[in-house]
Image (cartoon, rainbow, N blue to C red; front, side):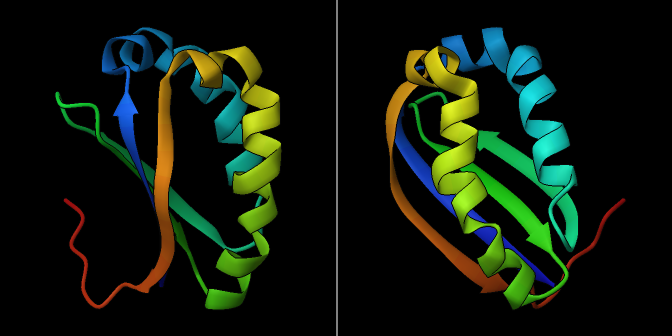
Length: 102
C-alpha cells in the first residue's frame, strides 16, 4: 500500500470546515474513480496546517494519480479551493509499513 501525502500551510480552517461537504461532493467521485484507490483522509490543525492522505494499492497507481491532484482537483474546486487560502508546501509518496483500522 502507498500513501500520497500532501501538506498545506496557512489554510483557513474555518472556511474548510464550513465547505467540506460541498468539496467532498466534487472530490469523492474523482478520487474514488482513480485506479488502485483504497481510501482518503484529511487532517487539519487549528494553526492552519492540513495533511491530505490518499491510499493506493501500488506506487504506479499513486504516481498516475498526480495529474488529478495537481491539475484536475484545483480546477474542479475553483473558487472553493481558493477560499481555503494556504498553499501546498510538500507532496510525496510513502510506503505504508503498518496500519490498523478499527
